[in-house]
Amino acid sequence: MSFTESRRTAPELRVNAWIDADGQRLDSPLRLADLGAGYRIIYCFQHWCPGCHSHGFPTLRLLYDKLKDKGVGFAVIQTVFEGADTNTFDKLRVNQQKYALSIPFGHDLPADGKQSPSFMEDYRSGGTPWFTVIDAAGKVVHADFQLDAAQLIRALDTDRAD
Image 1 (spheres, rainbow, N blue to C red):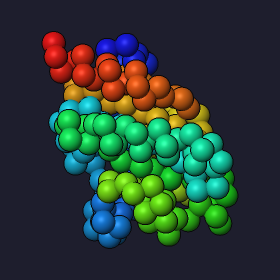
Image 2: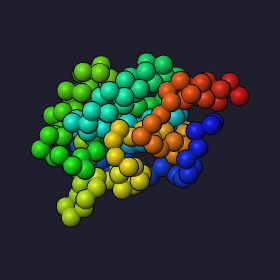
Image 3: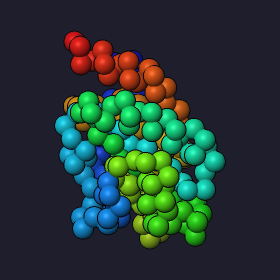
Image 4: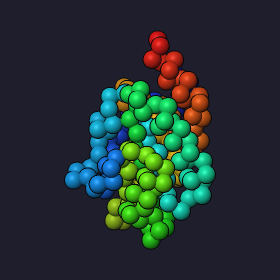
């Protein structure tokens, strides 16, 4: 696969607040295994981020449409590293509906005394919009603000054909 980051093992998610694909609050936190055994795509956003809406969500929507039935798991995390009064838990469902994404959405606030949410700390993400792709072996193969959806779709199709 041409998407190569550090190929380090993906840490387990530590995001505690989630809604499911239907917008219902989850009783327990989502884990990577809940996203399936294949590739997993995690998209991080902030509700007030213009780039998240103009670029990130449309890219995610395209990936979801093309890959949801091909064993790829998806999750969205609102990484609240600023603007906690605007980037609130209720915005999860707003964005889930706006983009017609029937996937889990998480709300990741920094722990007391911390500046960054758990996902940003664990995955070393740089802000929003942010795409993380994890392969079936649990390795991070892409982590960046940008993601070429067409290239990823082609790469995943090639991996499956081998």
